[in-house]
Image (cartoon, rainbow, N blue to C red; front, side, top):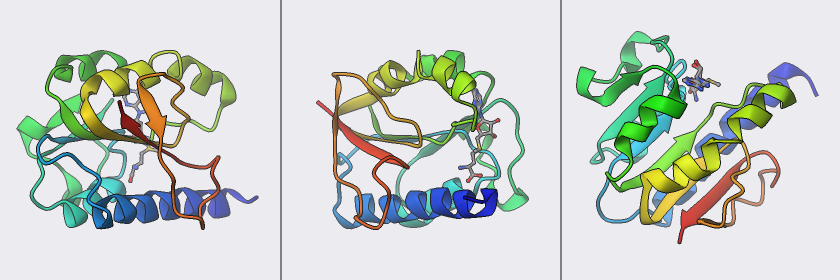
Length: 160
Ligand SMILES: C[S@@+](CC[C@H](N)C(=O)[O-])C[C@H]1O[C@@H](n2cnc3c(N)ncnc32)[C@H](O)[C@@H]1O
């Protein structure tokens, strides 16, 4: 598969799953959305559209987002997510989305040593985890994603 096709598949999966989460009202009534990996801000932009009333806090190593997708200072956290996101444990997020896969199995294996438990710990009970990497932890139960999306391409969970 070309890198263009792979990119389109990832973006389509994110959009369609976010639309499903919104349409089925899967989020708990309160709590912020945490966007791990702001990047260019495309997903952040969609999150703002489909969840206009939620606080959205974005994390990244450095700010590289399009000028229209830069969060307010108090909703932007820069640094290594494995360290910075820990400061939000206990805030009972309604949803955590992570798009921090690297395309390298070796790098992703290191990320997967800390990401699943961190995402679960950030969430309120009943909160939603969405990720481009699989989250293997007993604290999360898998939810169905739209049939059009390859079940190994993107992952959706609820915290139990
Ligand atoms: C694939 S991009 C995210 C793209 C984003 N969904 C968008 O719509 O533009 C991944 C981002 O996560 C950041 N990132 C990956 N691993 C990280 C880590 N461990 N700590 C902080 N930022 C990280 C990278 O700097 C990059 O900007």
